[in-house]
Length: 277
Image 1 (tube, rainbow, N blue to C red):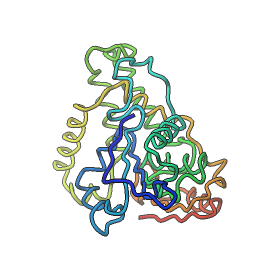
Image 2: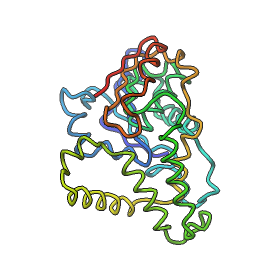
Image 3: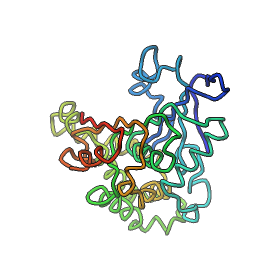
Image 4: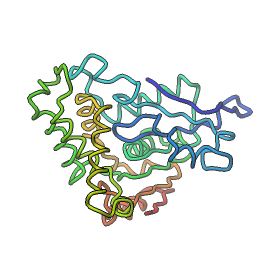
């Protein structure tokens, strides 16, 4: 398990770490993504939401991501078939090693958002608060499952994939998958504003996909996309008793604004609020 921390822990009168916040990344990302200016410049400074003069920030690389264990380390498609429950348990064990017995906050985006819901159900009192962003507390189905399945199919349909035993990345299959990832993670309103012409939009999309390909591994990506296969906190939402500040975006391709899930979900969590940006 690999992780990054910012600043230092502070202890209460009982000697317990009292200021730990865990920040969780999306599918295919790593804890390092939260050190990029678009996050770091808004989060960690004096008076900002995660001011490192007040909080000890923990940024894990989840199983299969970043510098944590993953198929491309050598086992390829023989790597254990992990899921979100396994990832949350690995986070719990990491926190135990760090001496954290309770978190001030779990903040997560996309996959990290879903992990926050899993945490809330499986360990209701571990975090004093949850802030999930950009997800739904329901089974991965509908279009959300479809694009994931098609991305996986694209990789496996490339003869160069060789059932995961490739010596060079299966370029065509990986490009298909990354193209779907790009669309699924896009912000349509923002992109319409930034790239209002056909030429500008096309050039940006091609550049983003090509740049991303250099850092991708096909087997890792298959595992990352499949890890959501049995995620479904919906039946046990009442178990989430910690305060929840849940935020989605109206132009999210994966979590469209007209889903009725949030209105129904917040009624079943005793301390939940939902906001749509």
